[in-house]
Length: 240
Image (cartoon, rainbow, N blue to C red):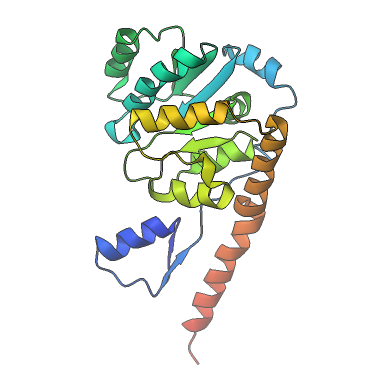
């Protein structure tokens, strides 16, 4: 009787691929528990605890599969590091491409700047988000929503993402300047370096990220929308 999807992109998939009418489709984005995903009081201490490098820290947490665009992000790091040798990328997650991506890092001579963290346990995910300076989402195709985006923002960590699927819906609402111009390595390198050169007050930016996530994607905001849809659907189908 009612279908919930997480993004306008997913609604379009239902219509365009499956040919289903969208009259009963409602977009309610994924929510984040902002009490759990929140900024760290001491990011330097948190980095030391997690064994993360100092300097500018980029983080991505992805399944290591082709559609995630991690090869393009690693290629982009060659340009980023040439201008900002203090910049490090930590890649969390596992998958079929791990060995190939590690070999790419070796061939590009980026072993000092790109690190594979492996699978990050759910209970430590918020800590990694909060410790990073930026979260990067390099997805090539099919990002239905991207809960990692709003989780990172809730931790106060700005997100740079490709203009794919639900990611662009989130970041356009937040600040379109955090969207890359495309999905290839030069697009990612340009976007990362442009942000690293920005004169915007960084601590104010982190606060802006947190406030946006809480006000737009917090459970307290979205759960009432789900409840309202259930009640509306029940009322519409209740016998007269």
